Length: 149
Image 1 (cartoon, rainbow, N blue to C red):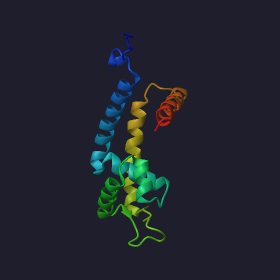
Image 2: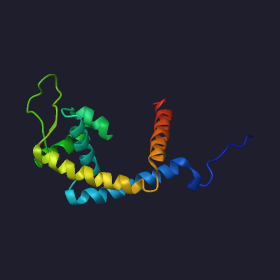
Image 3: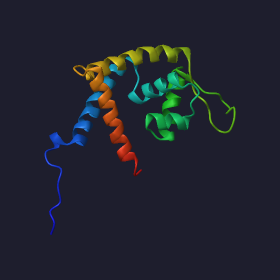
Image 4: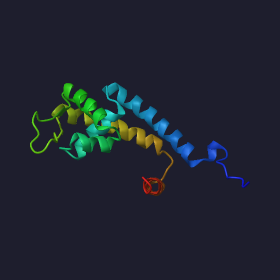
């Protein structure tokens, strides 16, 4: 019987270390956004809308990596806080384009600054070239895993 190769120590496994980094990043983002009463998902939604106004629920869900049902709950909460606005009736089709309100843009400015601070801390000690190489390397990993999806 042929012996299969196994992973080895998890500390040397790219996937394991990547998961550690993701958990550390999520924890730091949670802490940075907590004073603004935002979750990471809410922030990501606001950031996407700040960069691409008028996205639909489905487009936001894909961009934030949640289901459409979950995004609907997120948007409802942001609407109740007066941070986003959606028309009552779809201008065309069934899509309700979402826009930031003035309050939404103001909180996004604070949240974006807090997230940038977390990113800066995370990348301390990495030159701009190493940060670019990291982005490119992660992009390759994403494409490799998405090829079969």
